[in-house]
Length: 459
Image (tube, rainbow, N blue to C red):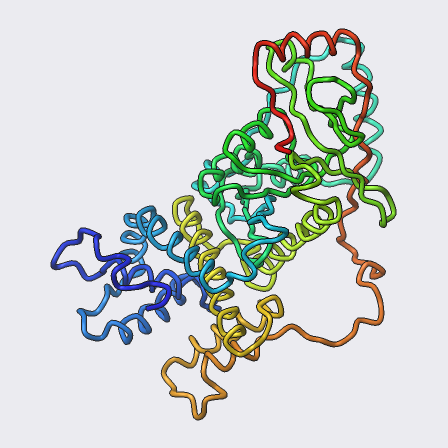
């Protein structure tokens, strides 16, 4: 009733003789996604039995898995449009104190790949599109043949195995994650070659007014940053050597931290430069460079560093979703069902953690101390024992959630010292290229300033 209020789905038009009603479908879909049973059909059977008990005053839901998936696919978009805003409202209500960080509703953006089964349906939709190779000249072909001969001497996978791995279907998931609560907010999916920036631009309309977006160095670009600013939002984004910043352009009031982002191709189109603030964070092995559109009076350097540091939580959420929750590889064998499985799995994990945080707050605990692993275990254990009434209050779901706390033992060694055999070796993000404005750029900026309003710091 708290997550799927009766009035929430009352406006759906359904057949009077239909065995599945919208609220029953939504409840069954959440239970189907949360269950720990191995096959999707077994998950449906478990969820259907529980839904039949919950809605015992209504006609029994349909018995076939195919019928359930058909109705879920039919109502999926409408159900998401109704349920997701409701969960967001509950999230703001329950986590009012965690809603803002440094005075802003902060959202981290990032992407991750989800593995899929190798079926024709999934390969058609989610396999990466291979680019056509250009024809090489004679000298290049000779050098290529020599390098191929050298590579054949080493033991490597066969060409068939390499091609098979390269064409493996994967779903790209781009997520907007609320930093204050540690819960998801919105997401987009696509083939493994999808653009994270395009996905994030699509989700800007779902953000509250004047939100602040933080992201890693891959989220850059004049059009991308301009879109965020034009939508009324702000950003704190890391920059690396792939970004060129300009000093002393004279386009806005100059401070020692003022820089401009004005690529040559943008300047040729007479588009205004973006006036930004450069923040250099020290304290790690290497300095970290951040840019923001906010002034120091709106966001201090320390607050910006704290916000970007909290961005790491989205990586932990991906690990929870893929490893702890078991969604590293989806079980669906068709493209349409894989989208349904991912959406309802994300929504299910979101709802479980939100309910867990609500119970911790009522018990006087900090919501940040919630253990996602213990929360998932509490829900799945309750689903498995739904036929048995708890012997005492300690075995109830709500007591389990109030005890779903992170371990508080002191760590005696760093996790980074462990030698993981499959640990990714990430290249260090180097400093951005910072240049002094040329005379031509200064003159062009002066002329442009007379013609178009500037995009400058707000204070």
